[in-house]
Image (cartoon, rainbow, N blue to C red; front, side, top):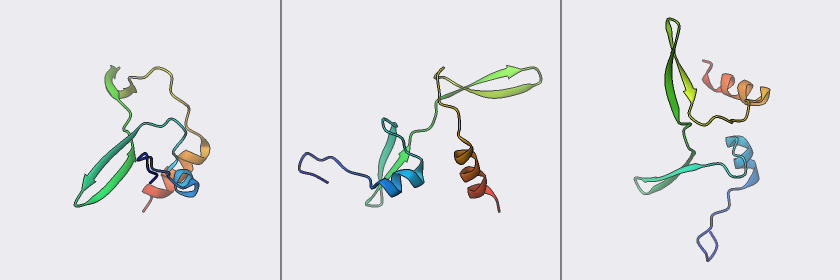
Length: 78
């Protein structure tokens, strides 16, 4: 941390976490440890036929890359 209180996140960690410049972050302190996470996307729920689907409140969002989808699938697979 520099004297102005700015925190630099190393590039390797930013890439691993999928953080992009300008990303909104949630920062909290739990049991004396600082936790930094990408902010959750704000959603609204809409009925489409017999289904209820989550739709982002922000209209213009970036499309997921194949790399992001693959990384997420690998993380949640057992």
